[in-house]
Image 1 (cartoon, one colour):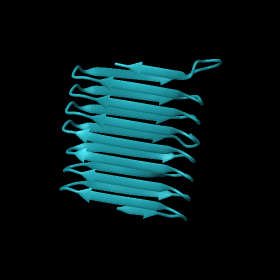
Image 2: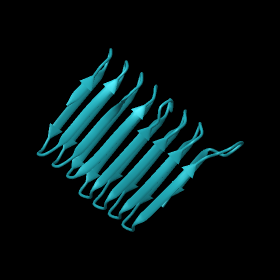
Image 3: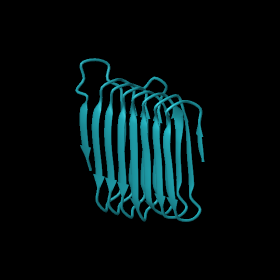
Image 4: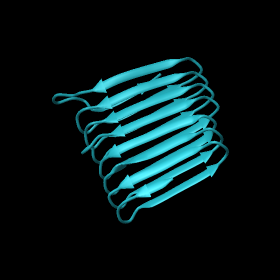
Length: 178
């Protein structure tokens, strides 16, 4: 299903499989939204408002879940989910959290869970969860200008939760490898 209320919206939904659910609901202008599902029992949601955004969810496999809720301008969020595990992604880009870039890759047979909350501008997040282990990340941003890379790989279970709340003169480039 697609709902849109403004100008210059571009959207695409491509589904190959059974019992899949895909929703795009975008307001404002000049947004591009894409959902691609190849498998069964997948859910993909792109919901939001704002101008000049690019959103994409790709699901290859069964029982994947991704939900993007965004109220920002000039942001891009891409989610890729592949494999045989239950993969879940939730991204919330709060009102006024502009110019953020989020790239999430979930691959493998282990369960993957990623929650991302943006409450600030001008950030970059690359999060990769790969392998046969169960991997969990929950990341929040409260101030501007973060560049964060998280890699969770392998067959062992890994979990990471962090809140970035820099008050002044902080090093805002963070890399985490598990």
